[in-house]
Length: 323
Image (cartoon, rainbow, N blue to C red; front, side, top):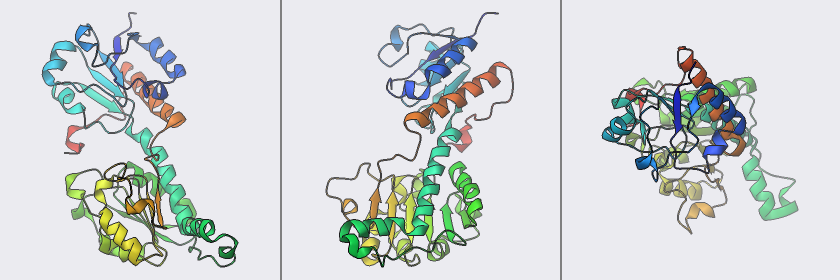
C-alpha cells in the first residue's frame, strides 16, 4: 500500500531535532512518505506541497494565510504540532478545514513537575534559608526561619487547566490542602482575596488572556501568611511587577519565584534581579532539552491514531483558543 504524503513545516531548525528525535523520526517515516527537506519560509514558494496530507512541526511553525494554505496545501488534512500553544498560527488552518493536534498535554508535564518541586521547597522555607545562608554564612545556620512543611499546608492554584490539575493530583500524595481556583471568575466559589490570605503558597496558572493582565496585585501579595510564597509559571502579564516589588519591600518575609516575567527578560537593573527574596529562572519550567522528546512521541502516537481512523486525543478546538 502506498504511504500517505507528509512534510515538515518549521523555521526553527534548532528545536526541530530536540522534539523529533532520530528514533521518533524513524517510526514516522515507516508510517508515512515524509519529504526529506524541511519546508521553511525561505523555500516554501519553490516547493510543491500539493499532495501533502499531513504536516509535522513544532516551535517555528510557518504562519500562513488562508489563501496561502489553499494554494500551497490544497490536500492538507492535519497538522501534528509537537509543542504547546497554537494561537500564533492555527486559526487560518482551522478555517480551511485542517485539523491540528498539539502536544500541549505533554508540555504540561514538566511545568507541573517544576511547580510541584517549587511548592514543596517553598513550604520548607528552602528559598529563604538558602539565601540567608549565602548572605550570612555560619551565623544563619542555627536559627533560620523555617517554613511550615507540606503536611496539612494550604496551597492555592490559580487557574484550572491541564497544568494546575496535574499539580493538584501530584500534591494529593503529600496531604496538602489544595484550593483550585477556576480560570473563569463566574465559576469561582472562593475569591482570590481568600486564597492569597489563607494559602502558604500560591501558584499562578492563568491563561495568557487580556482579561488576566495584572490580576495578581500588590494587595493580594501583601495579604499572604507569614513566609508566604508566590510562584508564577503562567505568563508574566498576569502579575503586577511593580506591585510585587513593593510587596517584597513591605513584607521581607515573602518570597517570589518567577519563571516568567513581562517583559521577558526584565530590563537590566530591574529590582527583581536584586531583591533578597526574589528568585528568577529563565522560562525553564516547560519542556527543554531531553524533555522535548516527549512532545514528538505524543505526535507519533497521534499519527498512529489518525492512520487507524481512531479518535484523536489532542485536537485543537478554536472556541478554546486564547483570543
